[in-house]
Image: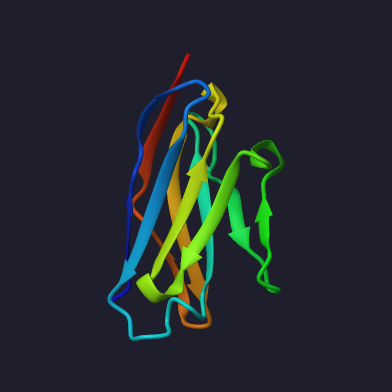
Length: 118
């Protein structure tokens, strides 16, 4: 069974940075490398929305409000994806979820809280 475990959330002041990580386990070798990856977030009182995701051509697609501030990366050798978040704003406060999908199905992490305080 595939499991995604996030880490790196926490509290930060406006303008600060955080790095979220998500590690995949429970699958055979090559499962992670053939998968698309993404980060979503759910702010208080709102629906979950995508933040960044890998595209079909290997490019990374970002939500407009995080462009230039957030960077999604992946390390297929370590079955890990990351989200580097810089210049954080109060509106970035949310629960962040990693998401992985391929022809076998889709999987979600449990979520990690990010709080940006002014």
